[in-house]
Image (cartoon, rainbow, N blue to C red; front, side, top):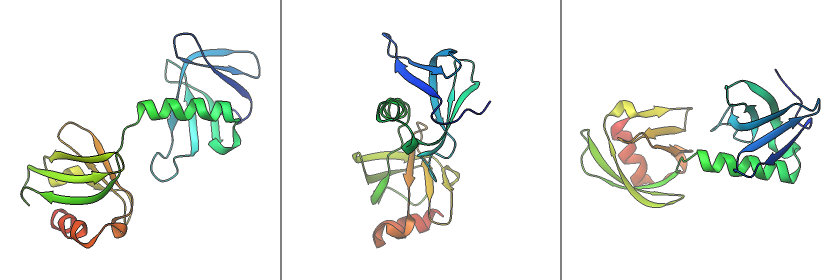
Length: 158
């Protein structure tokens, strides 16, 4: 069921759950936003789904919402999504897997274990998604924007 972007009201109940009230007066408690394209177009195409996983509203663009609704959705997404973006690869313990990577991300310096080369996925010509041994996903938004040292390390695994 597709709803237009501006045809609902969004609030938080006393328990911190989102409540979506549609134009027809039907209220859905415990809705969650789900991005259709979390990496390529994170602010476009967001479904609001109820506790049963059914879509109850569709948002074409976050920018089309009121400041209050946009803020609530961004808070909810930030609480559910954790995908650090790698800005530099400092070192790897080995070019054979499993190995430990030391990286700089938009959330600080960290290290993680890469189990196998299959845990590095291309999402586009210059975008990579690297999954560590705990299932945490790290994003390389633009491979060409990385420094030469980082690109050289990645080349050994791609």
